View 1 (cartoon, helix red, strand yellow):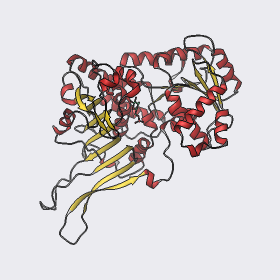
View 2: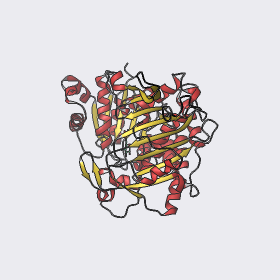
View 3: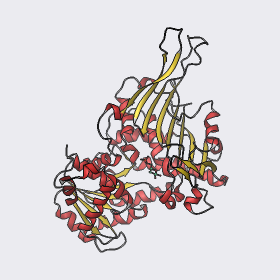
View 4: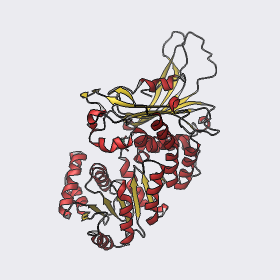
Length: 485
Ligand code: BG6
């Protein structure tokens, strides 16, 4: 079903996000017939380009990111014909009135401004949009990093908020657009099975792993100012934690969902210099091996021997409320780990008593595993009887639902869903200002405690599961990281 006609202006249109994600996502939606015929996409950046040159740039982005079979014939031409280009600089006047005229010439369409730029430009761009009368009905889309701590996030939100009211600000966390992440809500709230068990009476602990096999590569400049806690935990991983831990919202209304997520963020047990050493581990990769062969360490990639930025972090988080008291949420994420795998493991408590006696060995507890990537799917681990006429022998096996096998459709990229949700005016999968700030409120004291401790991150060899201290972090509690659900 097509959305309402829109005019989408992408700032930073010749940048990496636009090339790798936004242009291919818009093309896919167009291919599926979801973009109305008269919708228009305007690219803006500082480079002087003609409309034709920008179309050639976009065409190349499609060639690089879309399987070639889908690029034949008229759909590409139709998509490229929607594209226009204006050269403008956030800090200078030229170009802005051209942009205003081009947007006005589209008539009564929903104006969306996607700021795919460095965050330092969010404020200046919003100001210019306001000044040129473009903000009135417009929606603005921004993306992380939204600040590097609470104070800078508040300042950034203020700058944007001076021009756009909160109900027209869309803060993207692309993890919320991932199919399996949305499926988490479906699993929890469309099945009667899980909710009665979804509490500390039945759940022993939760693990959230977002492991990447790649290093920082050409993003080292940005990454070194951020580190894994800011880059992945403050946003993506806390959002996943919220979706697991939140109370059932009364509907999928944006504020109903976001109110519940906010309560979780506010219930996170503070981590500061008193408990930092026992519940967090920072790591940094050294040279090692990946599937493709030998790979350099972080410092070599960065070209500096001094950085103390963490490329791995493990945290034992706790949600201090009735539902979750005593249930740890173990989070870990890192670059150059043993494989690329992101999953959420909900580990249930063991049965209270075994009727099977010693002979069958220990009973393994049930686990629900939500695999975000790759091989998206859901597994529910159960104990069953080994087939055969002998006595009872039990074994742990998964009920395994692979999305690729169950549904023969292409798995859409997160941006496809999210961009069109902006046009639909649906903020459910976007972060509200108070959520972002609550997440920083929890993260800031961790960063502060690390700074005070002045300890270097623990080294780990590229291609492993991170520093051994992260294994000790969970094993101290008598538990273990579950590498494959
Ligand atoms: C980004 C981080 O937000 O998410 C990157 O800045 C990270 O460092 C990326 O690689 C991971 O996203 P995905 O969708 O590949 O899991």
